[in-house]
Image (cartoon, rainbow, N blue to C red; front, side, top):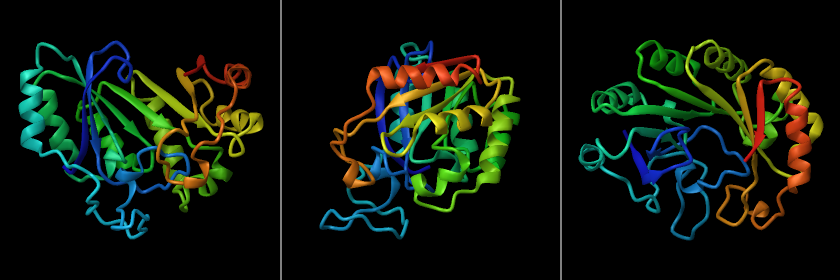
Length: 244
């Protein structure tokens, strides 16, 4: 497993759990608003993005697996969960073995995914390696390519939605609302896509950091009022829709 970062403690990322966050390296999407660009693709020495996705980014301080597991061993009585995020964790062929080691230590596991690898997702669920699922919904299907910067596998994304909703596990869907990229009608369309889902969170756009699309840096987020109005639309389709 190529680990691009470790956050040793979080109260927010795993509902009901004190958790560590493991950031895997590499992603198959290029979402304009992504604030982990160093995990998405390599940088040249001049700081420019390279679009040939090789796992060789010198800006990423990789964490050795042994060091991670030594850390977790020391936190067995202090942490209850581990969040696996990215990047896109399901791209890694050794993810099942990696998660099995974490489960063996007694930790609950939350997986963050973009839903582009339903085969891996189903494999992890069937193996009992997951305790909580979170899937990012980037846009209505017809807008996915424009927002993610790639020809997204829409059939696989729809398949992952169904797998998650039928998994029997606690789960949530998440959508980052970027002004100019998503609007209220888009929220309606996404809502229809996940109709009757348990939880859907609309997330404020963060622009005070490095982003994949540099032109979005510093752009103003939607107001609280606008976000609440979108959440009200979302509640017509799912059980819980909140802003965060």
